[in-house]
Length: 298
Image (cartoon, rainbow, N blue to C red; front, side, top):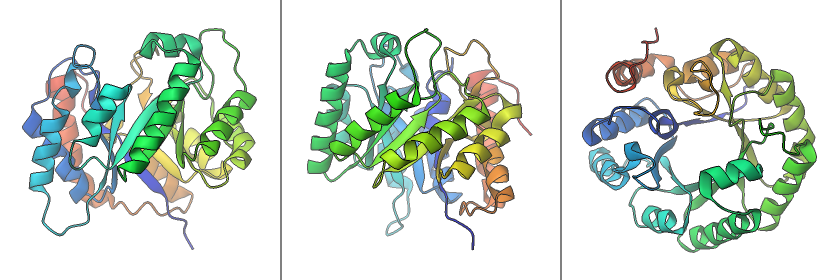
C-alpha cells in the first residue's frame, strides 16, 4: 500500500524575484492550470510591500480572477498567502479564496533583522497574533522555520534550536510547520538527520520541508526527507525561482517533476498525474523565457 504525500506547489516562491512583471491575467490562468493538473495545495500569493516585492503587488486581483475562473461547485484548492506583518495579515484575511496564511519565522537573528527588521520576541508575538486571528477567521496557518538547516552567518545553530522552536509552536497550537533550507546548503544527510531528530517533538503537527537545492542533489534530498518520515513537500515546476542569498543561480527551488520522480521511486502516492502537467510545464517555460530570462527546461 502506497503512502499519501501532500505536495505544495509554490508559484509564489518561483515568481517573487523575477526581473520582469508577469501579467495578472497570466498568473491567474497559470494558477487555474495548476488546479486542473491536480494540485490541491498551492502557495500562490503574498501580501507584502510592493516596494520590496513588486511581482506580488497584484495578489488581490490575481485571486479575484482565479476565483471567477474555477468551476462552480468544484472542490476549492488550499491557497496559501504569505504575510510578514499585521498589515499583510489583514489584506490576506479579506481576500476571498486565500484559505491559509503562511509566515516565515527565522531562527537566525541576522536573517530576521535583514528580512523583517524584528527581534525574536517581536516575531514570536506576531506568530501568536497570526494564530489567534486565523483561528477566529477559520483560516489555516503554516509557519516556515527559516534557516532550519543552518545559516551562513556564523550564528549558533543546532537541532536543539529547531526542536525548541517546534515545542513553542506546538504550545501555541500551530499545527502545520515546514522546515526551510533557506540558502540551499543542507546535505542530504543533514536533511534526513535533522528531520529524524526533531520529529518526536511535533506530535499533532504536520511537519514538512521546503528545500532549495542544486539540480543534481534533488533526488537524494527528497528521499532523505521521505525516509526520515516526511510526507509534506514544497516544490516548484522546473525549479523556477531560488534563494537570493545563495550566490549561485543553480541553487533554488526544487523542481516538482523531480520530486514526483523521486517519490514514485520510493513507492509514494502524490495524486499528481505527470501527463496532466503538460500545459502547466509549457506555461512555466514561457514564464522562464519571457519574465525570468532563464533557460527552458525539457
